[in-house]
Structures are given as C-alpha cells and as structure tokens.
Length: 111
Image (cartoon, one colour):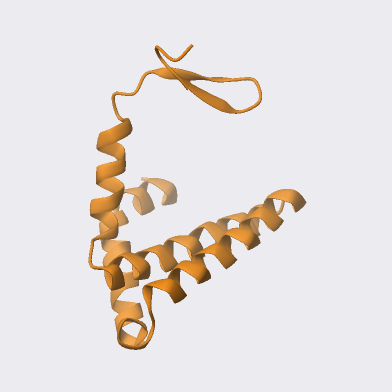
C-alpha cells in the first residue's frame, strides 16, 4: 500500500487525531466557530498563494491546515467533519455532467 493509500484509508483516524490534538490544546474550550472559520479562510489564502507560485509543498501544507481548521470548526459548531464530508459525497455521487473549458462543471440537463 502506498503512503497515499494509507492516508486515504485512515481519514477517519486522522480526523479523530486532529480532534484530540485540538482538544488537548484547549481549542474547543477557548476558541469559537468564527475564529476557526476565519483561520480556515486565512489558510485558504495561503493555498491560493501556493497555487499562484506553483509551490507543491506549500499547497499540500495549506490543504492540510484548512482541513485541521474545518475539523475544529465542525466540532465547535456541533457536527462531525466526517459526517459533513459523507453528506457532500452522498449529494454528488450520482451527479452527471462534465467539466467544460474554463473550469465550470455543467450538470447533465443544464446544458
């Protein structure tokens, strides 16, 4: 199994580890959903910067940081990050369509 496959197979475990890390550092006791959302947005800015500069290492780091913030945001807000991801997948799994030049996804029937 490759490292990528191991990480993918262990997403639930990683979310639990992130949650425990945040709890151990008092994030759930002393932060707010607003603070975590703003931190996620800040990390998205870092991701955009890494994209513009085509810096692969910083892209990977920023995506991970966004997820860490979103895990904390979800926990503070009162829902599970993994449940949110599962819900999103359930919504898109049967979606039909295609990507068109320019980067827009056109749903089948909207053409």
